[in-house]
Length: 587
View 1 (cartoon, rainbow, N blue to C red):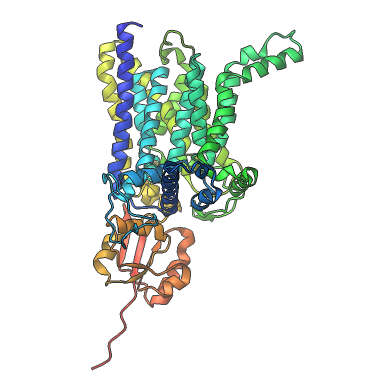
View 2: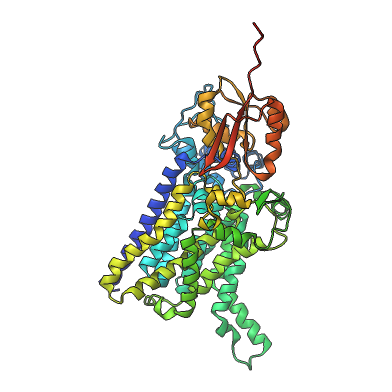
C-alpha cells in the first residue's frame, strides 16, 4: 500500500470519528432543551429495571452464585415490564444512567428518587435525562460515520461528508435522535448493519461477514423493524450475482438449484442467519424461558398493534389503511427541500452518469452494487408502511431508516456537481467544502428553527408549521410540548397545585422534576375526565382527536379563557387553563 493511500485511509478514519463525535456532542447539547416524550417515560422506568437486574446479577455472581444466570424469578422481576419491546436500548439507557448521572434527589435514606432500589455511586457527569439519552446520541453518531464511509467508497469524500451531514440534519430525524426511544437507534443499527453487509460484498475478508451478523442481532434487539432487513439484503445479493446465478441455458434444473443454494450459503448470509438470532436471544434474558410462547406473543403484539390517531389533510385516521399517498406526501413535506431535490438528481446521475461519479475501486476490492442497495434501502421502509394492512401507530418515525440512504443519494449529486464544475483536483479541493457548506446550511437552519418542536416541523412546500396546520396536518404527538409550559407552571401556580397534564405521563413528568424543569411540589391530578375535575390547572396538547379534552376543561372550569398558550412559529401546541378562584362574598 502506497504512502498516499495510507494517508487517505487515515484521513477517512479521522473524518468518520470527527462526524461521530460532532453528532454525539451536538445531540447531547441540543437535548438539554428538548422536552421528555411520553414513551420516554416508560423506557426510563424499564431502563432502571434493566440496570437493577445487571447490578443484582453482578453482585450475586461475585458471591459465587452461578445459578443467578438462570434464575427465572430474577429475570422476570426485571424484564417483565415493557416486554413488548426488545431490551438492547433499554439496557443501554439504564447502564448509561446508572454510571453517569448526578444524584440530586431529596428522597428518603436508601431510596433513589426514581424507582431504583438503592442509592449508589456514579461518575456524576450528566443529568438523569442526559445520561438516559446518551446511547441514542452515540448510535446516531455511529450512523453518520457509517454513511460517510459508504459514500466515500462510492462517490468521493465531499459528497460523503454532505451525505453524513444531511442524515442528521433532517429535522424529524434530529428530533428522534435526541430521545431515549427506539426509532432513531434502530435507524442507526440498520444503517451500520447495511454498511457491514456492503463491505462483506466488496471484500473477501470474513470479519465483515461476522460483523454483519453481530450487528444484525443487535438490530433485532433494538426494534422489530430489523426483521424486514434480510429480504432487502437477500434480494440485493441475488441481483448482484444475477449473471452467476443465471448460468448456462443448458444447465439442468438440479445444477441451477445447486448454484443458487451454494450462493445462499455465503459467509455474510450464514453469519446473519446464525449469529444474528444467537446475539438476539442472548441479549434478551426474558426469552430464555417459554421461548416460543413469549416470542409468539411479542410478534402478535406488533402484528395486531393498537391503532393510534394521525391527522392527515384535515382528517383523523385511527384504523388502517393509511391513504396510499400518506408516506410520500409526509416525506415530501417534512424532509428539507434541498435534500429531496439532490436525492432525485443523485439517483438519476448515479444511474445515467455512473462513470462520471463513482470512485476507483481500491486494490483487491470489487463493486458491491452500491447504487441498487442505496435505492432499495431508501424505498423499502416506505413501501412497508404503505402496505394497506400496516397498523397506524405513528408518522415518519416508522420509515425513518430511509433517511440515511436518501442522504446518500443527495451526496452523490453533490459529488457529481463538484466534478463537473472543475476537472482540476486543486479547484475541487476549494469548491468541495464551499458546496458542502452551501448544501448543509438550509438543512441546518431547518433543524435550528424546528428545535425543540421537531414533530411540528414542516418544510417550505407545506408553508412551514402554519401552512401545515392550515392543511390539517398532525402537529405533534407524545406530549413532549409540555416542557414549553413548565416555566409558566413554575411561576404561576400556588404550592402543591394539582395539574391535569393531559398527554404527558407521570414517568416523564417525574424526570422533568428530577432534572429541575418542573417544580417538585406540583402534583399530577390524574387521567381523563376525573383528572380534569380534580385539578386546579389543566392543559391540552393540540391534536385533532384531543378536542374533547378542551371541552371537558371548559365545562369543569366554567371558562374558555386560557392562562398560557405555548406556540411554535405561530402554531399553538399546548394551552394551559387555570380554575377561577371562588368569588368572594359581597361587602
